Image (cartoon, rainbow, N blue to C red; front, side, top):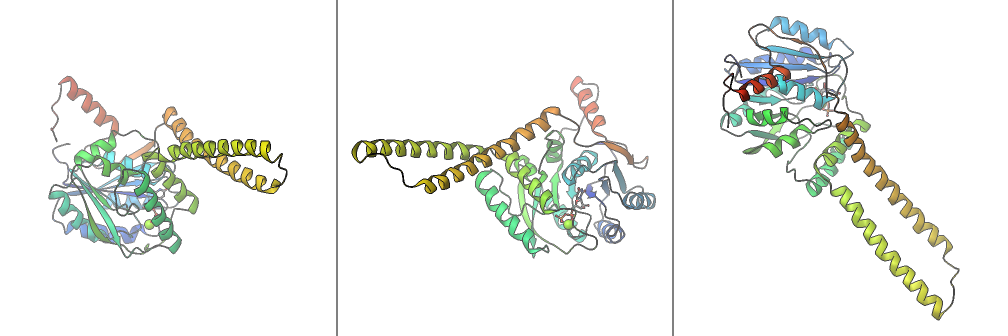
Length: 341
Ligand code: UDP
Ligand code: MG
């Protein structure tokens, strides 16, 4: 952390948000100014195809001291964008939020207070969530599944407006997972977590960037990224089916000796076989999910590529490379780093 690092870093991913950015700037900066602490806003443009990048640049020119803009040349996804933002954030307290004003900027102060009290993870629970009904139903189901099969205990996984302490952010920056779900990961790393209620609003303008398909993919990341229970469940189903069919064969054998061969029940057999084929295909697909993720991980392509960073000279660059270089130097004893443990 450089000496002039701000107290608070706000990380905001932006993907095709030209409709909402002016409203965001108009509410965010006054809300942050009112906190009376030094801050920086790290915008990450996730390869927007509209005028978002130009709007971000204009905002940077207007508030160069408080604004940094990380530009991707392509769309790498919300969580990759947030990861990039976290690696550029310099403050001891970091808050992530969405660009679409579903997370009111006025709530930043509430989260910051908790971080300053010493909590290193401030989770949020949306009061009166403003989303379409099928999103609410889907996320309730996934919530329950996650509680059941993963060690993650968060009340409301969907809200990205959360606060993280420096230690948690450093841990996140060292996590080189290709597909990840940041709030869940952070809740595992946190030593003093807390959850607070938070207001939620309707999207101010534009449309949700998530289709049903990308939501399903994201939730698969959540389940496969934090649990092997689905695989183990399949082993158990396999064992149960084996035992049952062994019993069936034994019974058929005894029946043949006593009563004679049986011929009826052909379609029952079809029914059972098709059901089991379905189970088997599902199992192969599930296996594929894990194997595919391993493949992505083994190839170890960078999670994102930064095209350019807009920042003023006052804010010294802290790219991942810089951080790694600093750490390596620190290990050799050439430079001193602040011990944050
Ligand atoms: N986002 C992003 N990359 C993507 C999709 C979304 O950076 O590929 C950003 C988007 O600009 C917004 C945030 O992630 O700031 C949340 O997106 P959205 O509001 O569409 O999601 P929802 O609120 O519907 O879950
Ligand atoms: Mg939204």
